[in-house]
Length: 436
Image (cartoon, rainbow, N blue to C red; front, side, top):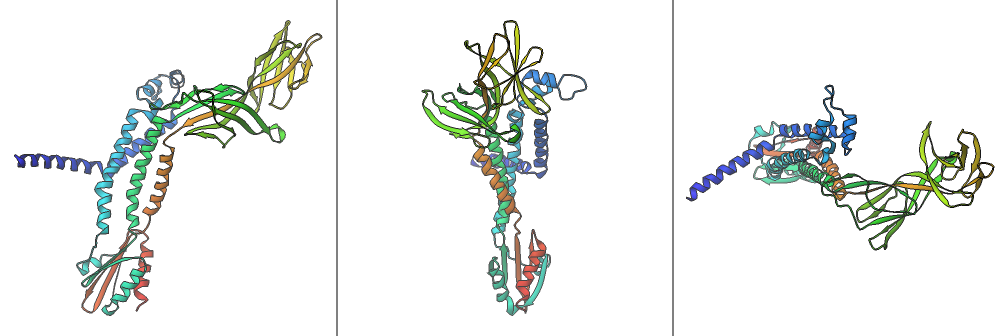
């Protein structure tokens, strides 16, 4: 009975080992990597996370379009980086890396750590460099080799030395760095979110305009922000120099948790949530007509020859007044409905618009453009890139081996290296010939 179960176990183990060896195939890894590159290229070409109407408009279903909105939605190419088939492709590629690591790289590393004494003179003659010296100089040569950071071992009439074993560890860490990177980016695509908000000065806001989010994203519901103030500094020629937002982060009870003035490249960070200053906008004007009640009109942004300005209008007593704003510190130009200029005014000043009425601009209604994002995988991804660069450098370290065997009155010595062969040969020659 025991023998029967043992045969079944050995058969299953044989099949698993055979499967793992197939997964460790370099050809399979290259094929999978090719398909991953194609998928990422499609994700770069096709706009991600857009509405269905966007894809119907830009990728119509015609005979000439190989990639139309039906193909995009069926294969989930509009959400490619979170698609199940894309995750499966990454997981398959990860399995090939793991299989290669444990069936090829790790055993090879263990092998290179062993004492590999040469048994025959013929083995030494196949090395990149070989020579023979007087037997009496053997100990001196071995000492020189040892002094050049070689691990040297002696057994009877044979010796073995190696250096640069760290270079053999490099490929293993390259694989694990890539695996960590794949895990980190996959986790980030499931957990991360990104929101774009345009908020008027003095207003509270919550996250609602989500641009991108994953299946497992957890949007903070107990936090809100208040725009205490917003202002812009200008350089010469009325060009925008920098724009600032004074932000307060408050909890559900209205208690301020953190306050900071942010600007471009200086965000507010709180428990993994990062708020960036990205844009600004003039939303409207607060006006007063003939010392009456304050009212607000919206402004529409226009752009001519690269210069932005905002336009709004107001109707009263069968008159139409057009107002034009160039920036937040300049004047407001006023025109009648025929386009004739009525003059310019500034915040707090009045302007006569006809024989009986005057208009006063009390304030700008401006908004700050913010990007709020959270990605719990960032530290993992950065760490993976760091180890990938470090292990890539280590992988290029040369691994050198030197063998020696006594034969009558001479000592035959030879060696080889996997990289920097010429440099290895020159160093070995110096260690040998400086005692002659």
